[in-house]
Image 1: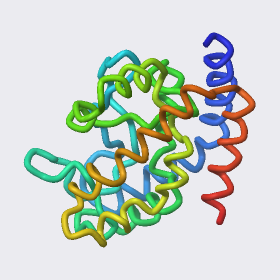
Image 2: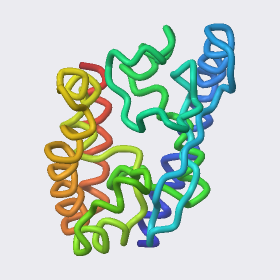
Image 3: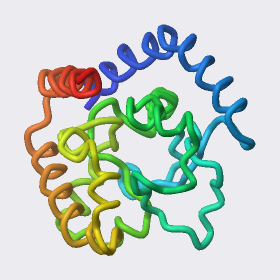
Image 4: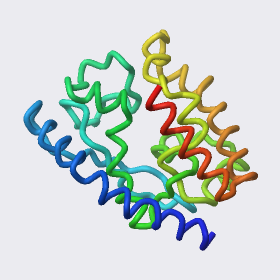
Length: 198
């Protein structure tokens, strides 16, 4: 666990430095494109069930989720012009390196969910998945890279997510926890980069 934490810090701190020019450009673009804050913060469930605020570049015009759906489909009318590009290239996820440095997340690990969907985890899955820090990327992120399009094609996006997508994600998350290694994490980082380039 200590080795993984060191890996996260050694990777994420230089990443923040190297990517800072790009992140500054994105921040300016977001402000010019629509009204609202640069960053989107949302409560997610982290290691051992501790909630934290995940950071993303804001990609939607209306971030007041109150009665709005927690899931975002590809054709969601709230997505801004620059948001479509940031989402497609996964650039909106870059601020999560700050979550990694803060110890709330890891570079690689099960993606953190909102409490509503974590409550649906079977107890055995919940205990296993929440035993590790959630990650910026994992095999489920690659497999469901076009999740927004899948949800947009469904008659009931939330039902599709709960009954079809989430169970598959849980299986992938558990497999990661059972077989995690630094070498595997490095391979996943490379696979994630390649999927974005493709």
